[in-house]
Image (cartoon, rainbow, N blue to C red; front, side, top):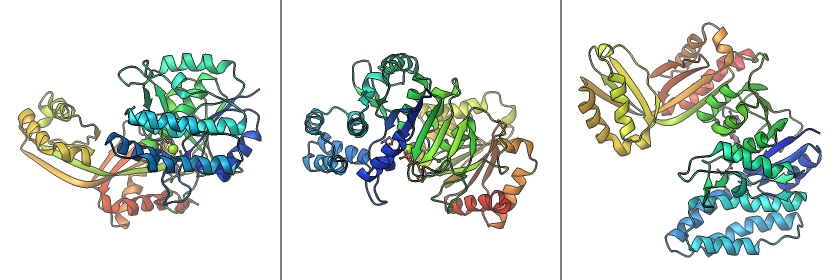
Length: 440
Ligand code: ADP
Ligand code: ASP
Ligand code: MG
């Protein structure tokens, strides 16, 4: 029999009503045997995710303040689900233990992970599946890095004899048992780990949109759905803000070639998006998708003849490294090199970095610019098509967007464009219009 791993995101599990939809989806296909739930998310747009409630509650505990009210509000979210589903389940013991561990300051990761942990217990009771605590099967090293090999070994062994199981997303544990989480949105990664461990035929990732969309639905109204996208394209887009899937969620699957199907819990009849290793399927448009992020600063270093100075780029990058800043992009000219970094991180270290650059490479000029956004136009079809960059430029010129930077990735899979933060939405809409709306 086929095996499918199904991961449900926060909004798919925000209430008893949503749980019922999820139950129906799982029961309608008996190959859906391994379930990875997130913590309950938002029920309406002004609502708070349980994960964020837990962070807030723990911060009170850490500051030695009374956190009982905040913990009661979290308990209420679960009780609403349990009562709405008429489950015979009490979480009293778990909440007592959580309160105790909050008092003894068990850590922020422990706190955040309880959202998934508790939802996993509820889900297992609702489905009649076995509950497997992720702390036993998702392994981190003592230094906090993820241990992929050990996880695969331990998880395969544990799940081998279980016909059906619920494994909560987002967290695991270090060898000493301390809980550690992935970065935000990390339940997507857990789903991939489970899919690899059980050699699943398919990893279904159920969310609140009908697949990977050409661009962010919060920027462009009702964007088209991408029917098939490759792992690499997806990674470029999710790194650049398409949060529908965590950018690291393909790593466990890459070697196995297990496809991911992004689906909508609220519209299970929609086919969603297939994310695959490689495909002959031609994309419908020249581009596959448009991603983007705001909040960058650029540092332009000018020095005559810098191209002939051996080690120049290394010395510049070393200054950023020594200050613990990661670099997004480094477009260059003959006498200039520009470094794009996260603005908040840069602002905290600004003067140290400028002084460091002066010491390291004695530049003629250093110029700073802030409030910049980066937009990534991604697509396997761009390699074969001439004039893509030209079309992007003309679309942006027509929309009166000033382009600060353009950089074609060495993979030819993406073109990165720098614009001012305030032009971000206009720019994405203009690129969408030229490649998608004009082709419809
Ligand atoms: P979940 O809680 O199910 O994990 P997320 O909130 O993490 O869901 O991701 C789904 C959201 O991602 C969508 O509601 C949408 O607002 C946002 N999003 C951003 N870019 C895209 C995109 N290109 N395609 C689809 N959704 C996107
Ligand atoms: N609940 C976690 C978060 O809000 C993990 C996830 O949803 O994937 O980030
Ligand atoms: Mg998510």
